[in-house]
Image 1 (tube, rainbow, N blue to C red):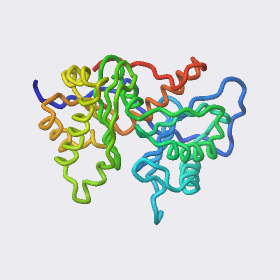
Image 2: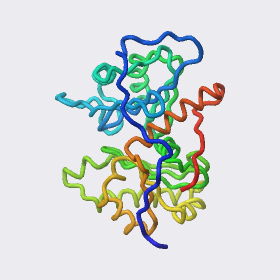
Image 3: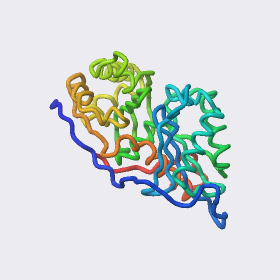
Image 4: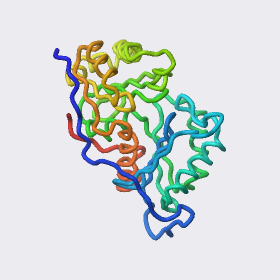
Amino acid sequence: MSGTVTPLRLPRRTGMLVGRSHTTRPTVTGRPEPVAVDLGSAHLRVWLGPGQVVSAPVGHGLRTPVVRRGRVVDVPGCTAELRRLLREHRAAVPVGALVVASRPVLTAPADQEAARQVLTAVFAPSRLLFVDSVRAGAVGAGAAAGTLLIADVGAQVTEVAVLADGRIVAARRAEVGTRDLAAGVTAAMLAATVSRLIGELRQEPAARPLVRPALARGVLVVGDGATRPDLTARLVATLGATVHRAAAPRTASLTGAGLAAMSALRHPTRPEPLPKGPRP
C-alpha cells in the first residue's frame, strides 16, 4: 500500500460573518434558522449559515480555561465567552434557532449536560441536537459515503472512528492533542496514539471487517492535526496508508454540524440527521 498525503477538497469554504448585534435578534416568522456550534478546547466557533462563521480562542485572557479536553468545565464562564464572541463580531443570532452542537465522541452524559446548559443560555433554541465530531467532520469534509476511517486530531482530544455511510460503527478517543506538542509530546507520539486507537478498533467485532477496506481507501484527518505536515507524514509512515487532509480541517466538524442543522429543518422528525458527501 502506498503511503502519501493528499488534500481533500471541501465543497464549500467558510468565512466571517459581521452583521447586526446579536442583542437585536430577528423575529421568528416561520421555521427556525439553522445554527451550529463547536465548543472546542482551543476555539469557540459558531456557524450561522453557509459562509458565515465566527470564532475566538477559548479562554483568551482568562486565568482558568472554560473548556478542557473537550469538556465544559466552567458553565458560567463558557456562557460569557460565547456571548462575548457573538457580541464582538456583531453576529445576528436568530430567536428560537435550531442548534446542532458538535461534541467529542464518547462524551459522558454529565459533560453533554454542561454543554446543553451553555447553549440553552446563549441561544434559547427551539431545538437542540448533538452530533459526534467525527461524524460531523466526515460530512463537513464531503467524505461520509461508504466505509471511512477518520481521525479528528484536535487541540486536546484525539478521536478515531470507523463510519459506514455516515454512521459510527465504533470509536475511540484519547486526551491528547496538538497543544501537547509544546509540552513534551512529539508528532511521532501523537501518530502512535492514532495508530493505537485504530488498533483498538480492529478488536471491535463490528468494526473489524471494515478497518482493512477503510485503510485501503485512506485515513481522513480533520482538526488542527491535519494542518501539521510533520504529524501527517508520521501518520503515513506509521499506518502505511494514504492520509487525506480536509481542505478546511479546523472547521470540518462545524461545517458538518451546520449541514446537519439544515438537514434537520428539511426532515424535522429525523433525529441528528446528517447528509452524505461524495467519496474522496
